[in-house]
Amino acid sequence: MAFSTVIGSVELGLIFAIMSLGLFIAFRVLDLPDLTVDGSFVTGVACASVLTEAGHPLAGILAGALAGALAGCFTGFLHTKLKIHAILAGILTMTALYSVNLWIMQEKPSIFFYGVTTVFTPVQGRLFANGYDMGPLCLLLVIAAVLMAAMDYFLRTQLGLSLRATGDNEAMVRSSSINTDAMKILGFALCNGIVALAGGLYAEYSQTGTFTVGTGMLVLGLASIIIGEALFGKRTMRRHLLSVILGAVLYRILITYAFQLGLPASDLKLFSAAIVIIAISAPMVKPYLEKRRKRHAAD
Picture (cartoon, rainbow, N blue to C red):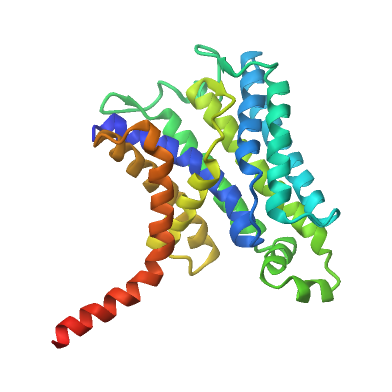
């Protein structure tokens, strides 16, 4: 692959790594499925697109993250207070967000704001390598690193440990007088706020806000988490978070390479699902293959 293609893949991979860090809170910390993310990612896209077009790129990112957090709170409310299953609660919120996101985008399915100032504008044209502008890559690296450090610190605090304990053993945490409902709502809010933050960055990076861009983000995030865990390990929380980032970047490079080999765009979701299936089943298949290898060696 050309240098510019690799760097472009890494940049997109870092944006999706930020999204995957949000998913990490729901799927690994709370151990709860959250299907809200396909909608909250677009919420971040919608808020960033509208406000960036109006000349407020940073406010667009922050507003998107806040709106995503509110969506996560709503999912948490449905799950904890109305006793709706987490999967169904996420589906209901995601469905409602289709209309909300269209309202935010003023009924426009797509918003294009080429040439408008974004959060990437101040760093563009300041650092080049092989003729490629490295400014956006550096900014995304900083954002991903700061977010990873903040999450690592938060999950070591008393509140963060309570959140992790809720995912590990809810009954024990409840017996310790910790409000598990509040912990779940907090987890859903953090998850979707970070996912929406990634959506805002994606919109300003591509200078386009599209209503349908959130489709399949859940699978993409899961693939990043699972690939990262399988290849880079998860012995400590810091290493676990780093593996999520590296998994997202590697996954994006694999997608780009597959496209260069001739993968049709229509097969992207199938390819993504296949990667997730392989990554999940690998630990189960490996012992079987090891037994067969030893059997053949003995013969």
